[in-house]
Length: 222
Length: 218
Image 1 (cartoon, rainbow over the protein chains, first blue to last red):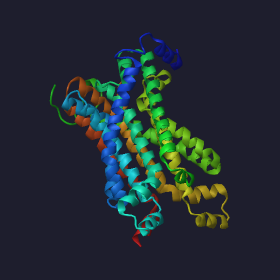
Image 2: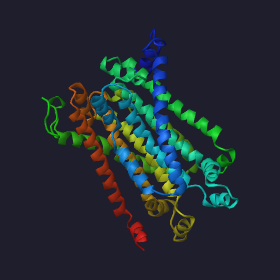
Image 3: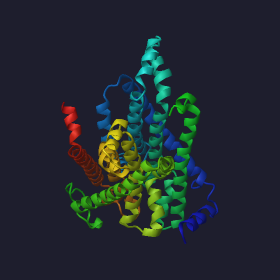
Image 4: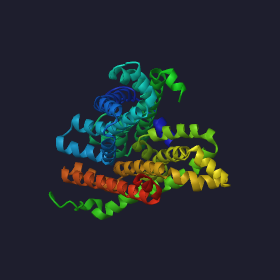
C-alpha cells in the first residue's frame, strides 16, 4: 500500500471525526497552542523590533541573538524542560516562543530599517510627532516584511508543536507519535497529512492577512 | 546507572559520543552540500529566465512550510527509517533557503558593474560565474548559515523515526530513563556544533571575499 492508501485508510476509519482523539479535537488543540505561543512571541518581539528599528540601534546585538536562538535545538529544549519541570504548558511554550521570537524580531527590525528615509523625513517635516511617524508612516510601509517575519515564526511554531506530541502534548502530532509507536502506518501518514495541511493553511492565512492589512499603495510599489 | 560523565553514552544507543557527533555532522552537512550543488543551477536558471523565479519561489515557500516530522514520515515508505529519510527533507529545506539567497544576491549586482562586464566582452554565462556569483558570495553565505544551523537542530527530530537523530537519540533515553543529564548533553552538544559550524562559515566567507575586508579597512 502506498501513502495515499494509508491516508485514505486513516481518514475513512470510523470514529475519526469525533471524541478526545478525533481530528476536530486534535486540530483545535494544535491551533490553540500555536496561537497562544505566537501571541506571546508577538508581545515580546514586536515592540522591541519596532522601537529598535525606529531608532536604528542595537542591530548587531539582535543579529547575534538571532544566530544563538537558531542554534538552540528546540526539540532538545522541549525534552529537557519536560524532564526538569514535568508535564505542563510551560515546557512546551518556552521552546515554541523561543523559536518564533528571533524571526519576528529580526525581520521587524530589518523592515523598519528598510523604510525609505526620505518618507520619514517628509513625515517629520510636516510636523508629525514620533509616534505618528512610527504608526502612520513607518509601520504601514514596513508591514509586508513584518508579516513575512511573523509568518515564518508561525510556521515554525506549528511545525514544532507537532514534535511536542513526543512529550505527551496534544495536537496533531499525537497521531504521528502514537502511530509510530503502535506501528500503525495509516495513523502516522494521516497525521502527517493533517500537519502539512495545517502548515499550508497557516501560509494561506498570512497571504490573506497581507491582502487585507497591507495598504494598496504599498502593495503596488512592490 | 545514574550519573556518568558528559561524554558517556548509554549502551543501548550502541555508539560513542564522538560517534554521535560524527553522525550528526554527516546528517547535517550532506544535505547542506547537496542543497548547495542543486541550488546553483536552479538559481542560474531563475536568473537567466526571470519569469520562472516567482513560481519557483512559491513552490519553495510551500515546501519550507511542511513540518520536518511530516516530511520524514512521507519518505519512510520509500527509504524506510534510514539516513536518507532525514537527509532528503533537510536537502529540500536547504534548497529553499539557498535559491532565493543566490538569486537575490546576483540581482543586487549594480547596473554599472554589469555594464562594465559587458563592455569587457563577457558573455552571459561568464558574467554570471565571474562577476555576479562572486559578488553574491556574502548573500549565499548568509543563506548557508541559516540552512546549516537549522539543519543541525532539525536532525534531532529524526530520533522519532526509529532513532535516526544522531545526538537527538540521547533525548529518548533522557526521557525514558528520566536522566536530565542526557538531555543537557544533547542540547549543549547540538548548540555548540551549530555555533561552531556558523563560525566556520563566517570564516570561510571572509577568506572567499578578501575585497570586502579591504573596503571596510579603508
